[in-house]
Image (tube, rainbow, N blue to C red):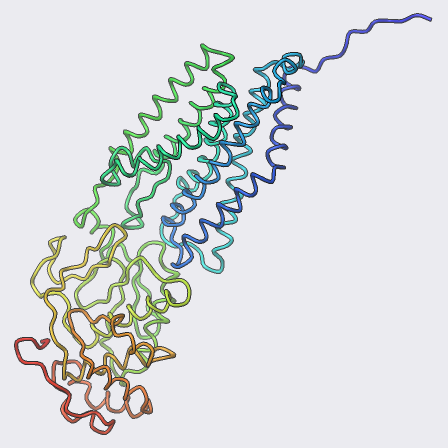
Length: 498
């Protein structure tokens, strides 16, 4: 019998590397810890946006912050995977493997694209959980990319630290240090355009106006360059020259991207925001008897505004045609302004409807709001402005005035209450009812409760017969006597609303 020695067949380097890459990716995707992180991130994003109707800028901020949590999981997982060669005395065993350390590092970097896939699935789940609602406003794909890239950076950091510092304690210490740095950055920056805020991974400042330009593309480029630098840092242990050059170029690109953010950021302020909020930026639709004008991407909210306004319009006398327009952004003092926030569930949605109804009734009944002829922060007199995400741009409402004894005060309260399923509950919380500068007394609230209990057709007839008085500062007198309301106290001339 003869024996023949045959040289063992070795797989090509590319095949071996590809096998390691696929194996590492499958190991990551099969880990329950990763999916626990995904569930936690999705739950946090959903909880943070639960109370308000979703907007793209708010959703991407919430999704980005949730992705930071997922990135923390991936930092630990990446470090554990990269340091497995040094645990339990296996360093000597790892040196005998046919796969060299550089190839194993390349295989470990498969965690980076796998982390991107995991992050993308988390963002998709967050969007699905918004149904049947859907984000409004301007969709910015760069900010969606931010939520995907951040976990990839976390995985790359874990691998890089694990290859350089394989000690088991290094992973948690790295995560703690990164969390401390991220927590300090917003504190160091005094405004959204400060350098620490630009270095923060997530774009947190809400969009003042949907069409207002934002340097979000430069911010994503900054994160991608940071990702490349971290990956190069992991490979620096094996190839010094090439990876050093790549790291230097990536860091230069990151610095240039941050500087581009500073250069392209539009200064926030009334004067800057006005072109993106005025009538030219609004899309108007007539629904029923009322015209609604929404900013770019906010068209789906018109149905929400209509649900709030229609019960008021149906209670008005037939033939009333000079109904106010509902605008979002800015508009003439004769229009009603809806802001960029709207409650989504339960009491939050009810408060939004009540606020818009109160504004609409105030304009409809010509109740005073801002002081005529006094310009606001933007320099435009007699203009209504919405409460914008970065602070109120409303005109100063001036000192309060008394609506005591005026017929329009009682009818304004009745119009708000009759539009709600539980009108008495609305009137039981007068602190939630705001009619510009008008101060409402207890007597007017009790009178409105009497009207709510009366048949609606009788109150509607009274409203039709006294429509001119209702739209003026005329006292109620004995008009409400048939409903058991008489002798409403009247404010003196100096404090009474005009």
